[in-house]
Amino acid sequence: MGTGASRGTDGGLGSMHAQSTAQEDRAADVTPPVVPRMPWRVHAVRVLPGYRLDVVFVDGTRGVTDLSALIHSEDAGVFASLRDPALFSRARVVYGAVTWPGEIDLAPDALYRQMAKAD
Image 1: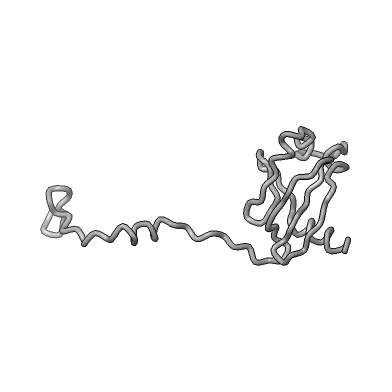
Image 2: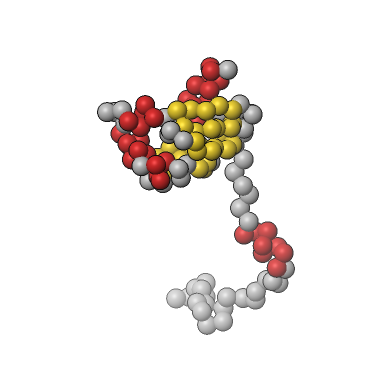
């Protein structure tokens, strides 16, 4: 093997560096929150009766959107599953978009344009 071969696990790993403090360990484990900055990113959503959503965007724009026509259309696609009121009521904001379980989400930029036009 020669003199340049590694020494494996027989004590050749060298000395450990000084341990960090618990505070440093906690700081290293904390992932900074994602802060959406585009004005069309959703800040909050509240589910309303009749397949409607009250949506607030990061720039303060706010509006109510009625998704009943989309959900009940023949071309609803993945949105057809939201006909179940229990599933529809599980709307939440993830990374600036309105989402539901099952990887269903609304395009926040299109939703923003719709609500900005209504004002």
